[in-house]
Length: 580
Image (cartoon, rainbow, N blue to C red; front, side):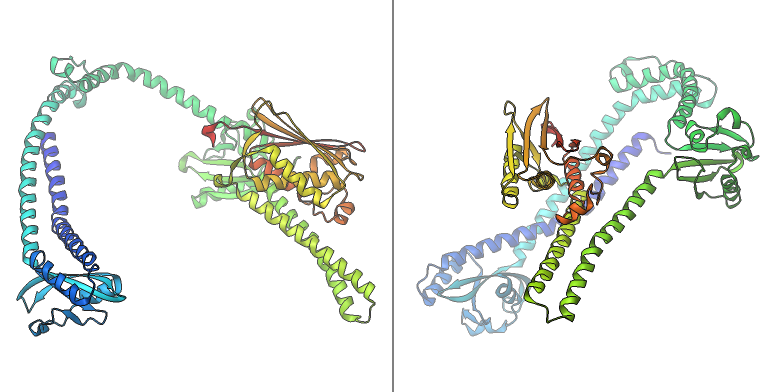
């Protein structure tokens, strides 16, 4: 078997050769790419200089001068790929020039091929340029042999340099590894008796000069010396962990009951006791039949027979009503584990969703029925008077507006429920937003009296989605005005209290009965449904307000007295800079 040092050296050698093998084919490509860019740069520079010519003949003269000093050969083509320069018939042997075609399409072309004219491989670079409102292509030609020679020389130098680096690296690596592994050999020699079983504990490792000279190996020796004394502590730790696991099982939100193969209860946690209305002392160590849960009993038998987890839904006959998911997990000869999960809240959410759909359908069905009835009346009775037709039309428009408001509110709720992206937040002065909302609401309710006060001792700035925030304020102001006797009196106050911005919106309106206060934020809930519908309300306004406030990490509370008015209090924490 190879030693550690040999393995390391061979690994380094393999990695180096692997990287070298990957780089070797890339080097010629990189050099050729550099050469191509250089040729393109020279050709492009030539095109810039040619633009100064005042005629085509002058341009050809400049090309001839440049060709003699800089380039091996230069050609000029028109937009139809006809060679304009040089016009020597000796050059007519070559009529295949794909780089020119590419340059006319893409502005630049490059190709390497054997030239029958020069009888050797040549590199062709073509660049498009515009002269006197005409399109031309300048093509420069270079012997590819020169490029190949540069690539070969560089590749050879690369290989020689890499080989020298490999040899130097191998020698240095061997010396370093030899120096570093000497303390390791000493440590292995000391612990060898423990590994072979002749010693029950790891013998003490003497800290020699070689070991002490390297802090890492010194720490290793000290760690191994402490290992023997820690074994006893580890046994104590394992015992403690067993007790901790029992504590964890007791603190879980799921109920757990373990039964053995004879259906005897070996463990039950407190949550399972609460779920099944059991007492540990009455069931622990006794048959599971005493739990009086025939559905769970059959579930255990199914799990043991099929040897796979079985899931069922349990509805204990107790109040308040609960829904429990029960999973029976077989444990082979050790018995079966019953896990109870409370899904009551999930069921409530599903029921809320079902009620939401039903309410939305009902809210839409009513105006649709009204619109259909009036539309059929207009269709079946064209002889109706203009006054009656106008009255019917107004009712149709009113119900359309009601549906439009409902749909917009539903879309707003859906958008808010999806989340509030960080990109939509911007720092705003809340007083400015309230003023903007006031101006908007006064356009709809010109007689309303809205006053705004603010304690400006501390800033009232907050990172908010201004559109949604104004929408929430509009909804609260609109409700305050609608449910107040005209002229409605509404007061808005803002202040900064202990890094919390508090906004209160109070009115002197009809007020809300105490039994309705807990439900006013439910979707489609209205205290006075008839009044709400007559005003075009859909029962979603306060739901939207609550969701917008929550998405801004805020809280909304309401106090009300029937006949005296209602006050909504919005509280928003001011996050620190690192929370944004």
